[in-house]
Amino acid sequence: MKLLLLILAALVGLLVVLEVSLRFLGFGNPLTYLADEEIGYLLAPNQSTRRFGNRIAINEYSMRTQPIAAKRAKSTLRVLLLGDSIANGGWWTHQDQTISALLATHLESSFKEVSKQNSTPKTVCETVEVLNASANSWGPRNELAYIKRFGTFDVQALVLLINTDDLFSKKPSSAVVGRDRNYPISKPLLAILEIFSRLFSGETPPAIAAGDEEPGDIVGINLEAIGQIKLLVEASGAQFVLAMTPLLREIGSPGPRDYEIRERARLMKFTKDLQITYVDFLPVFNSTEAPENLYHDHIHLNLQGNQKVTEVIGSTLQPLLSQDGFLESPSLLTEG
Image (cartoon, rainbow, N blue to C red; front, side, top):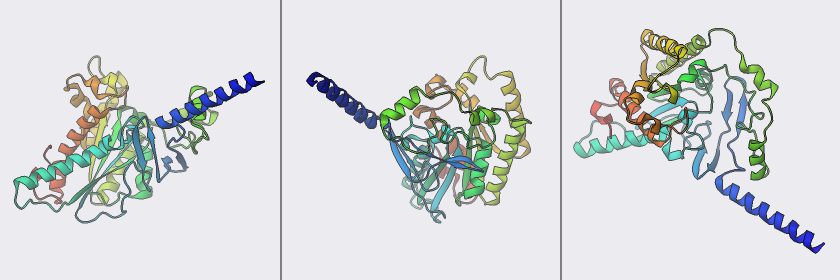
């Protein structure tokens, strides 16, 4: 009996150590989601966590951004980055290393550099805010629904960041919320239970599998959503930029698959017809030494990749903001 008690105590002790260790890594406190009829799903507002040492904070508008005022101050340059997990950064990216955070720092550094070179710098900007409205697996239709719900937050520019797969993304659905382990609606009682769920989750729920098929011209429908986002952004008086990152397998030889080449050409024509400022990162990454070093996995970017995207988007925003009249001198947004 005494031996049994000792074994039981040892097992309890091991479980406690395991639970504490997993909590230290961030398990047991995952980000939670809300189902939404129009948007599909949102990150639940006002939450924060750490995963593998990376801080993740979500504000009152389900953005991966610090709390903000709904209306922009006159002396603030405000940009909205709208996108999916690439814009969001996921658990593998620290809050300060997301594209939105890097872009804010990039722009602020540019202003400070100009201030040093000019006794009376020609700018009305005192602060820079780059908002980050994004969620895993969002596509253009999720992003359009978000803008319709919340508006554009009085930004001077909106950057819609998509990846090649987003051209084929499905209509918004909340089927995954609370059913897929990556979209929980509540936090597990124990970190051990979260690990158990991730290791031994069952088959795809029928409600999710049923949404796999969608008839019609999916790419055309998503392009239409992008066009509607452009109209809403420009109606608010802001500049619109569309940027697309490639999958890792698209870089180098043999390059994109035939169907991707076809739809990429279609996207290019679409942006020209609608006069959309468009940044295709495929040639950018192809001209980068060791482009594989830009990726966290086959689709998501690491810090080096985020920095590359930040540099190009910053350079793209420069003439647009100058043209818009917010900046009196184009040189204020040169690369820092």
